[in-house]
Image (cartoon, rainbow, N blue to C red; front, top):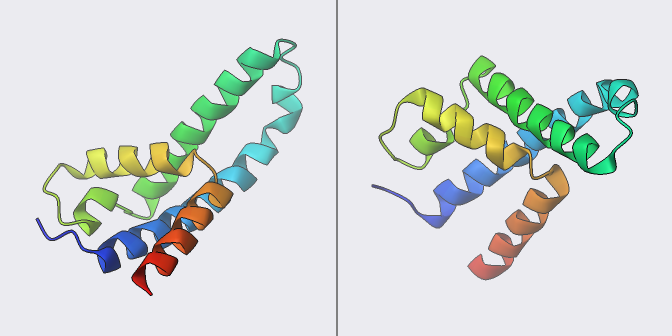
Length: 105
């Protein structure tokens, strides 16, 4: 296992880019999401769609975050991890990346 700060920063940059794409993709579904009247269910559907879209995009571009960290798992696990991480949103991961840059100094 070869996890170091550089590997983590590289993974975070990839997740920020994936999360940005997922956020833009979810915006395409906004008209259908607004048809759900209960806000809690709207949020559940939005989060689920973000995870699925993140998984599909990471599989499409072969973004295996677990392999990038040096972990030996099947690629589908890395794609799933990327999808779940991307669903947190780009601004969240950008803040984490900036925090890591500050730690490195």
